Image (cartoon, rainbow, N blue to C red; front, side, top):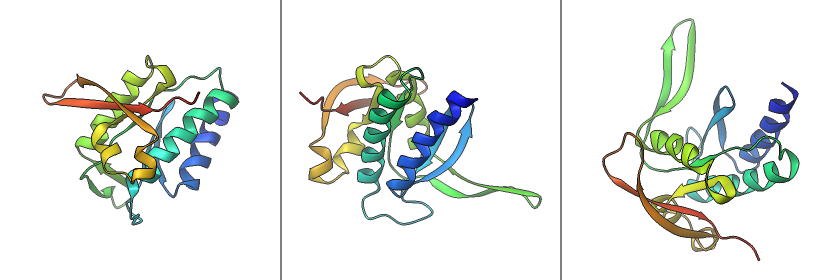
Amino acid sequence: MQLLNRFFAVVIDEIDRHRGLVNKFQGDASLAIFGAPNHLDRPEDQALAAARAIAERLANEVPECPAGIGVASGQVVAGNVGANERFEYTVIGEPVNQAARLCELAKSHPGQLLATADTVRGATEHESALWSLGEVVTLRGHDQQTRLASPVQAG
């Protein structure tokens, strides 16, 4: 539990710092939302910057707990789901599924961080310059191909 708490402390800190919302935890995974319910002018910038910061901090601060990080953007349905006794704010849609699949792929990718090229293209020039477009893949459970992007490696 202590290891997971250290891991999630980094995740929560960076999501908060980049004005996102940690929506849920499931085992050793989390879902973060940028741009809902709080409006952001460029949610792609915030999400990509947070992901880069999380990847760097986890590698330095919690190296014994490798994580795959996936970032996708687009239209989702956002709102409260549940019953009178228990509501939960959530997001549903293709970008949520894409991000989950990218997390799986990222675990075996250098840097352990992947985003969709569409997300990078939706970011400002400053943020998108920090990313490199890569291969085209078909994500599990998807018919259409997705171009991957990963952070430009320093050095």
